[in-house]
Image (cartoon, rainbow, N blue to C red):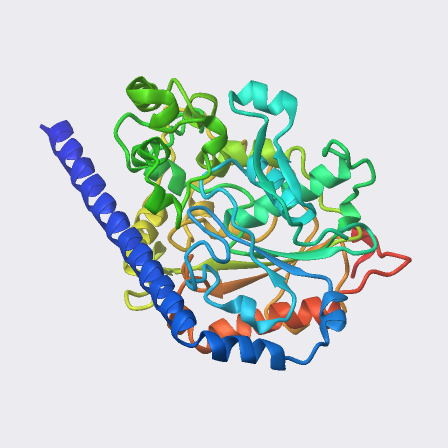
Length: 454
């Protein structure tokens, strides 16, 4: 009887979560389509005025182009500039600086694949996922073609600032390691110094227990439960609906999952986990489990010439020793249940813990998507140099090779999508980030090593 009630509760929770996520997805999609149609209509009606406006611009282009770009990298289920028309993943923050790039990467592709895509987005050319990786993971070696590079001069003398939200922060770390390892065929001179700074907004450095709530098996952090919210993802790329993909794409084109190529049997293979990224684990959710993050982090370094900053978010507090959501109105409706669930989550006692020394209480504070302990700085399997601060100015003068981190009262999507929701805090956050990139981060000839920092 007890098992029946537990199963009923789990099915009800799955149904509610599915409906909430689908409705929110429809809201974002419809808003983007409406904004795109409105923009197209405005351009059509006021075409002459727009062209006149362009001609009146002061040609100070050379000054702007001399600035190192600030590249905003979206997280899971995210999208880049222009993908959703005028709808912005970063809530329009890219308009705060003259030299900002917002790439559109696979929303569900693995951290590794997204790092490769980001490189070719900047340098141009056809995305090369690497021969060995492609064979191991069962997809095409080559992906989309960037006919026009967004920053072709990118090198050690022309480094870049990166700002990553959620999984986007880990994508940038993997990319920097690839540059250090000279992992791009035809580019023998890459180095970690191509990256000037990395700023993380709710960065997914050490995984999240939410992945287990959403359906990943805690036993291995690789496979999914037969019945879970994540199973819906298997249908997206197989359906291959042109109107939908024009605005949004999971990014699995290099797996050739479309019904046009795989047929009906391809759908069966996907649902059974025998084909596509689910067969090999080459997608983003396994990378976001604690086990997957440890595997990634074991090959990633914090480099002595790069500046690092992290904003960790949380929407929980302790009442009589119990961690609970820190309010109702301040948490997005899509995340409130997850904030509660993550704060109450207990790792199964019948399976080995994800790492030696794991304690449930360390992972209770969260923002509805990630545990706060995961967002401060890379700490698994080894802890990287870090420094906790209260105010942004506390870390000045900045020292490279150290993760400065600040804990902010906010949920996981507080600083993206809807600028009005965060209000003044939104402007203060991005103003501080851009000011730090432009005024306080400079590469010097002699660097201070992490262990020499005060």
